[in-house]
Length: 511
Image (cartoon, rainbow, N blue to C red; front, side, top):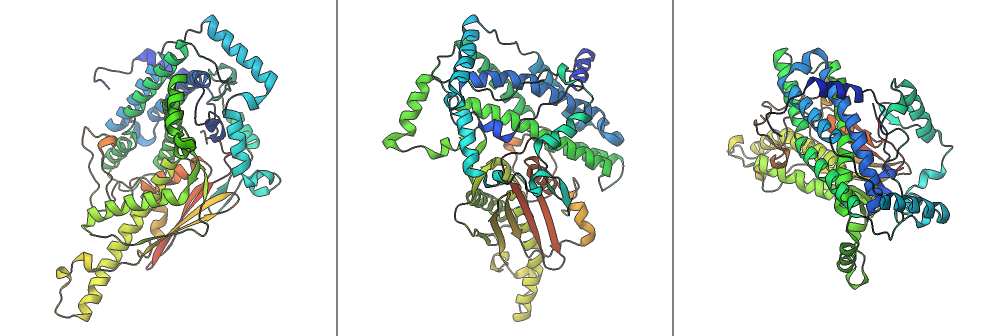
């Protein structure tokens, strides 16, 4: 990252100018139109879109961090995060623009003519891929008159999204910037290009330049969540408070939601570039992937980081295995509490980002495992001592205790995939339920300390302690139109409901 870098006055003025531009929303559907084998020409146009759109979002992050409420903006860790965003902004805006030769101009014009003559079905696998997927996996797309789809209302915190035209219309009216001034005004992330074209070297060179830049930026921001958490800890220490103020809470919700959007765009574009291959490599890849005439399902199901056929039960099994491993290591268990996976239907699949889903399940499962062990350990030891008076609680090995199981139930509906996590971990007092959604609220006595050279790539997830698991998981759910709910019975246990939007029609919730 370099210690000599600084936010100059000229750069700051440029950032403030960009922060006035209107962001351009990118839908999940447009992200999968590239198909599993992205067209280099479409990626070339998408790379130009990304290089113009990301600086707008990064500029807004810098502005938000400068205006963070109640002195949070002055904390050393907050300033560090702000400088990361400013540095990434500078790198993107200073990238050399692609030199478009006459040959490339001719190819793009030829492509436009072919597409208009032959229709979208011959535009490669992009539009056809997205359309066919939507027809197969969107049973609610015929329910256009359903009020639950076309209106927005809130019922006990569950928000059902409105139709995109109505929702984005109201958002756009509220924006103050002149949209015609925005670099991405009228542009799209995905633009179909014809197949079977030998694209010139400049296309591949520019795609690689953007790929390398985004990879560097992504690595720089890996530690943003934890570093920002450190900034909030510094604020709490300076203000001698243990609970995050509501103004800080609102700011952090907005901050982390927009971060998810930025990471999603960067991660998707990096993954699409990694899937892109030259015609020669594509033929070799096809030879190995289709050996014996069998299609490589794992690669064909992915478009970037999005899995078009995401098997919920398989993701849940991965999350269960990871959470149990962390739990067993933390408590010194040979075998953690049983986690039962209940799926009324054998194969529940939909289009989603597996990385988001496994994160949400992992965080909620960790909470259930910890609650189950810590609530039942003294009770089970007491019961064993009552049966055998010669025993003392400290003599009983935790591995001799039999904990009640945790249940993970997966359900499928027209609009939602719902996952219920049910434990018998003693529940949460009603007065504390609002607090579990606040950042840095934790029931752990000692919060894990981050080292100065902290890197998320080498970071081992703790069993608990940061107080970010639930609020961040809820933002991940809400990002694609879902939600995360919690209902508790103090003295018995807690049920967590994860609702995932399966309509594949949601757009980013831009602030």
